Amino acid sequence: MWRAIKIFMWWACHHWLPTMAYLAKRGVHTNGYCPRCQKFLETMVHALWGCRELRSVKEKCHSFNGFKGSNDMHFLDFILGWLRNLCSTELEFLCVIFWRIWFCRNQMIHNKAGVDNRDVVKWASDFIDEWRSISQVDTLPTSGSVPVQNWTPSVDGI
Ligand SMILES: [Zn+2]
Image (cartoon, rainbow, N blue to C red):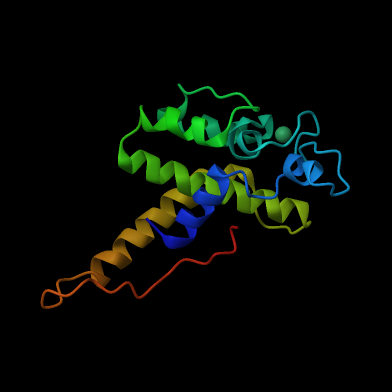
């Protein structure tokens, strides 16, 4: 998987991403509530999956619909629940979706236009397709050496 997304998931699983609940716990001036729905504390699980404002994303992810998580569970436990039920391709897709959700959330907080939760699933699907088509070209066998990855995705989703 992509380096930036791996780093993002590592941060999420350690609850190091600056959700509002995280910031409130560390004394930053915020009530800790979700900037999208304003109804629940913005925990890691809430920010990336639980928020009701993400229902348009979940409606388009039929293979992920069976899993329920609570907002206050640890994100690592949340991910372990998925690991038992999804194949690696589905997990990869889910990680890109989380990454994009976090990017859209940050854009919304900073009042930047042009991103919409409704586009998350299509964006993630296009991203994976594009990466696969590029990596097929870039990873053609090169006299037994390790394939060189010439393209890396932007890290601005973090
Ligand atoms: Zn919310």
